[in-house]
Image 1 (cartoon, rainbow, N blue to C red):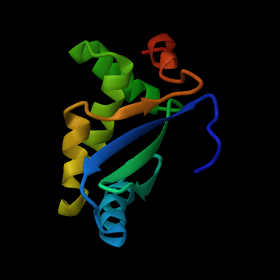
Image 2: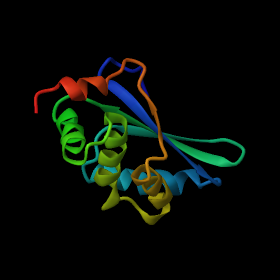
Image 3: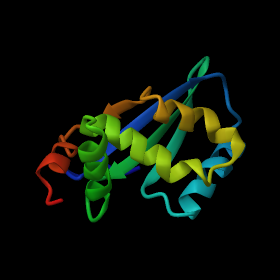
Length: 125
């Protein structure tokens, strides 16, 4: 992943256990091939597998998150997790399901060094 622009943020999901890199990559790539936006990288710690999703608030992406903020009354960071989970849920392989479930549950960490998600609140609906 590249150094973030002011329109990028990251969603990081950590799941206990060591998931096989090739299988997890293939499972997640299915979601991206079907239209999920952004990129991802996978890393391991001693007892966790961590997926970092690169996201943006450019183009229609801010509108999708804004719609969730308005409809369900969630904070942008939580809405961003839900939007990513929705994008991936139908298309990822079963091997990636624990990561999608963590997104739905709001268990991810948002890394937003330039406060890109603040733009969701100021974007035109």
